Length: 376
Ligand code: PMP
Image 1 (spheres, rainbow, N blue to C red):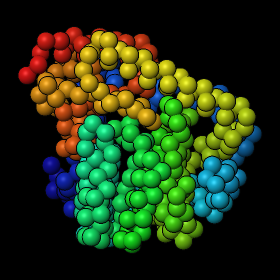
Image 2: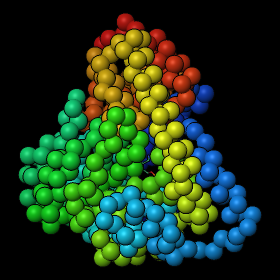
Image 3: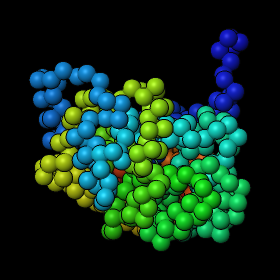
């Protein structure tokens, strides 16, 4: 490789994600590795986008985002005002800007094991150090004693995620309360990634905002409204913190897409709300279908999601999760090995129920065919 393109030290050890590698090799396979719903964006939002395109110019918005949209998003967080909302290019950019705004080189950032793949990469980009606490199977809840112990090392930031990618499990209000208290005592910034909060099945998960307004909540439109490609997310938190995050955000992206922001205002109409509930119920059906087929066809233990789209299938009796995922890929179905998310998810595969019902059915058939009678 041309020496001129040697990577900066901060990215030298970042590798393309395992998920991406499986996707790239799985052309033509049933994809149960997906992290996005395959629905159209609600009609009211698409309609609004068409109207905006036809009738309006699309200049930059303020760095913080459209005031009306900030106000509407604030209405989802009791007691928040527009001043507490920064609009970003997806929650991924919100995470990026929040980490870059506060984490100095060598600072520790505390994350769970298992955790969303992007967290360690973002910490590496900030030249910080990753510190982990266990969220052991099969419950996948944080070991609060371990969090307390790790907090003694004075991490600068702690990233939590509820409902979780990959485990599908949610943090209870009590757990959020404890985590918030532990972080505050340790002068550590707590960042709660709640991108899957509205994709729930029986009970709407608690938000960190319900227990404290001192820390940061990150979320977005991607999963709730099937709007992954529109790149629209936000940070909710104290105005002072948002000002710092905005310094990174403004120089990285200027503002989130004006078209996406204007169209997203339609989400706050009665029609938009009805369509959002409809998407949630369709995902509920997919979850039920996958649970039923895992029981009747695949016949292996699994952890069903409380929120988000991810099932954790216990394949520990078949060998390493990476090897099992590889075998399934040969059998025409893409899954994600648990080991990609941390050692506490080893022995599991992450399966997404955001695929179509037809794909879920075919995927379950293929999995049961590949795994039947092939224990290690
Ligand atoms: N957080 C988690 C836990 C995710 O799974 C994802 C998407 N895979 C994101 C953040 C980023 O989502 P977006 O940038 O589309 O809002």
